[in-house]
Length: 236
Image 1 (tube, rainbow, N blue to C red):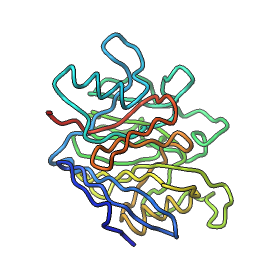
Image 2: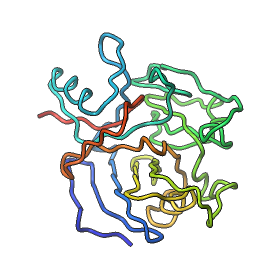
Image 3: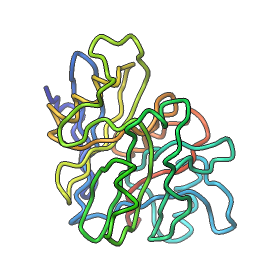
């Protein structure tokens, strides 16, 4: 069920409050025909930006400001990405196909990317064979959905619940971000994207650090330092 009480539009970023499985989410839709998604990690001196406030201040020096932003994938203590990270066509970190502990390595994990053919979410293992020119990419895990199929280890009755966020692709030109406003399971987040937001493919971004910057909602989350951030800018 979609609640329109928080509905707001900033250019092509549309914000909505959604209830799914009795849990509240904020959903942010980006129309790539009208707006450009960008990935941010470091400033001009190579220092990690770490927060939406710092990112917005840095952009304003360049004659822009943030219209929307969200944390974009997992990172190490020095803010460097755990997996693939591409910004403005430049690879900042390679795809990570290793095995390991934690959510990132819960296979299959995945990559959200924007190429010359539009937006998509794929399995990490699919990335090396990709022939498209990729402008933006972030790797995280686990993959929530691929082809409408929920990750095989997700349990509808799981007690593993946290604040969580993710990104889904409804079409090559429509990207949908969702962040929970209360603790949710992986299954609840995955079925939100599948059943309510109609995204066949979706990727988990992170848990406890899940953060949103949305001026129309008066949101500038400051939970902890952030690594990669994804967002839309506008001219002030």
